[in-house]
Length: 217
Image 1 (spheres, rainbow, N blue to C red):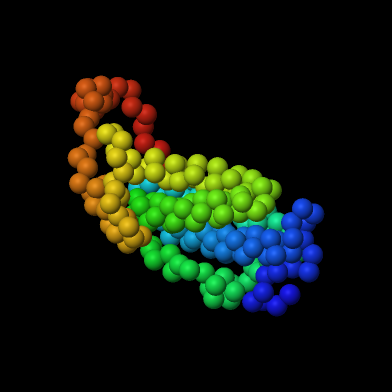
Image 2 (cartoon, one colour; image 1 turned 90 degrees about the vertical axis):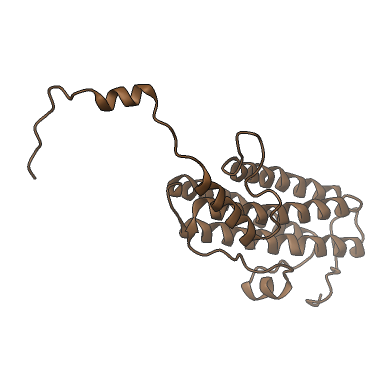
């Protein structure tokens, strides 16, 4: 089987070699997308800064691990179908249909705005592939549906940081990573500072009693 021909010499029972090749073709880009997403999540994990740093930093590691498992499952399905999964960076870059993630070191909300765009892209493409493969192979369809269940949950986690109290997203109308990042950051800056509660004001105004003496070092 040449790199340009995905038709396997054998495939799973119930599918023809031609059908197996069609499924392999669909899974090939899904594998690239998942590997790319795992790298993107780690890139954000390393480059996020600002007041929300720790919340976002720690949120992304479980997502990375789960996406890596999705990629592994997709690759193993390709092998089961008689195909040859390609996991090298060179093949990913040569065959992908999207650009690199475009945000470097940035505020947490800016990264989350851009990441929401990333998740939207991969979820839309996963849904298209699921619809196409459903006419050929229900087993692979089930695999992609399971992926979607996790990916859509992770996007919900991301969007929870971008949602306003009225139920809209701060990145609404954005169609690019840069645009979504700028919108999320702008909205965060424009938000009024939290007001002090009466209890906090009273606590601050109350004299300190029996304060412990300062310890020397």
